Every structure is written in structure tokens, then in C-alpha cells.
Amino acid sequence: MNTRPDQPLRLGTRRSKLAMSQSGHVAEAVRAITGRPVELVEITTYGDVSRENLAQIGGTGVFVTALRDALVRGEVDFAVHSLKDLPTAQPDELVIAAMPKREDPRDALVARDGLTFEQLPDGARVGTGSPRRMAQLNAYARSLGKSIETVAIRGNVDTRIGFVRAGELDAVVLAAAGLNRIGRADEATDLLSVDNVLPAPGQGALAVECLASDADLISALGRLDDPHTRAAVTAERALLAALEAGCSAPVGALADLLADGQIVNEMRLRGVVGTLDGSTLVQLSTTGPVPQSYDEAVALGRELADEMLAKGAAGLMGERSL
Ligand SMILES: NCc1[nH]cc(CCC(=O)O)c1CC(=O)O
Image (tube, rainbow, N blue to C red):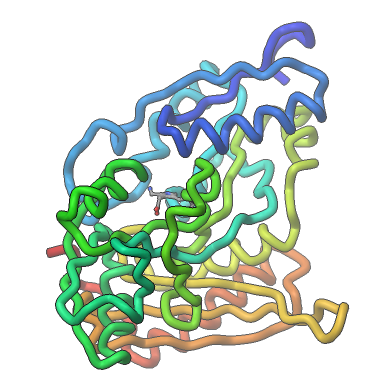
């Protein structure tokens, strides 16, 4: 670790309520492991100040780059990111020392009058800036014999829920993990089954990152790692990378463990790509032994990507936001 044992470890974090909450939990855990104080260093990222549509600015790393720069410059010792905001390419000088146990990966609906997705009226206005959500929500609505109007919005959790409270939208869709982490789980009026809406790769999981050269810190942070979360998220991100898609692409993926009684013996990886209007989806799944290494997890993701590409996935990903 870079600083003297009596000095606090510096944790770089975005300053949104969600980021502060997840960083606070990691800080507490690191304090317990190392016996050292942990100080939060607030860092503003491009994604926090830009008002541009995320799908248009490309999404790749806009919430992450400033935190990584602070790590490389030695201004902070480690950083906490939402895994789904992290580009799939890993810089050589940094490592993800821990992926703690994942929260609920599902998307949540926050609708007026307590409505579930099935109860939304035909033509309901549903806010989301995510092409992945647009594609799958439109397809889900279609399967229920109705249509919805997806409205591109962005902003933090409070801002997005505010559109519903103000009566401007019938509903918004957000990550359940985000609501849970800021103590607002009860705002969700529906949790969308992953059978209908697959989450973003890595959704609900965190990445704790530090310098690749900081062996002591890597080993301390490693105690927060959850191997099943890491295997699942690694497979999901390998799928995303092999599809050559970024976090703003209409790609959903989720790996989960299949248990036979108490014995976990397989990992299933599901993936989806679609057109924004939801008229065409390529949705496939594959199952294999629980990956025991990084390479095995990557292989599962690549295998599914190859199958999806063979079914025409590439042709569906050209579209960006509206
Ligand atoms: N930049 C958006 C973002 N990044 C991580 C989360 C939620 C928490 C998570 O997935 O870990 C969110 C908000 C959302 O999608 O509603």
C-alpha cells in the first residue's frame, strides 16, 4: 500500500448519492479488513457534468476515466465503480482487485399509481436513455399486445423518478440495485423478470480497482471478492466485448448459477441484442461447467457471442439512440 500504515487509504468515488452509498459500504469493509481509516475522495467524471445523451457520447468510460486518471496519478489508492459503467478493455496499470457479491441484477419499474409493466396502458410513456432497455421493453410490450412510447431521459435516480412524480411520464426504468443501494427499493412498482428484460452486463455488481503494482492492497481488497460474481460478470463482459459492443449498445446479458439441489454445478449465460423498436431480438443462452478461471469464463461469453453473431446479432447493433 502506498501510504504509511497510520495514514488513511484514499478511496476515489463519484459524488452521486448512489456512488457515495456504494463507496461507503466498500470503505467500511476495507476499514474492517485493514484496520486503517479510509477517506473518500470525491471526483467528478465527464458523465456527471455532461448533459448529453449517454448513447450519443458513446458511454465508454464516461463515468470511469477521471477515477482511473486519479489512480494512475497516485491521488487515490483505490476506486469503486459500477461494473456496468466500466469499459471491457482493462488498462495494464490497473486491476480489478475485487468484485464483491452482486446485488439484484434486475431492472425495476417505477410507475404512477403503483402500476406494473403489464398494467401500463397502451401508449404509455416510459422513460429510459438505454438502448438495451428500449429494445427489450418495446419487445415485452409487443408480447403483451400493446405498444409503449420510450422517452430518452437521463439523470440521477432522483431526477428520473421525478419525471413520474411530476406526471410527465407514466413510468421510468432503473436498476433495482441502484434503488436498493440508496434505500429506495420501495419506490419500485414492478421488478422486471430477466425472462423479459435482461440486465446490462455487470449490472448490480461493483468493481474495486487499484494499481496493478500495489500488491499489498490487491491482497487486502481481494478479501471482498466474490468468485461467483466474478465468474458471472467476466462471462457477461466477454460476451459484450466479443459482440464488439459498448455499454450504450442494445445488449443485455446475465450469467447465473444452476443448482441441482444444494450443489451448484453449472453456469448459464443468457444474452440478447435487438433493434430499438423491439421488432427483432436475437436472444440465446448457453450452459457450461462453473468457470474455474478467467479464461473459462471468457470462453463461455465468446461461445455465446459466436452463436448470437451466427444468428445475425451484428446487424441489429448498428442503431444508436433516437
Ligand atoms: N450509469 C448508470 C448506472 N450505473 C449503475 C447503475 C445502477 C447500479 C448498478 O447497476 O450497479 C446505474 C443506474 C441505472 O441504470 O438505473
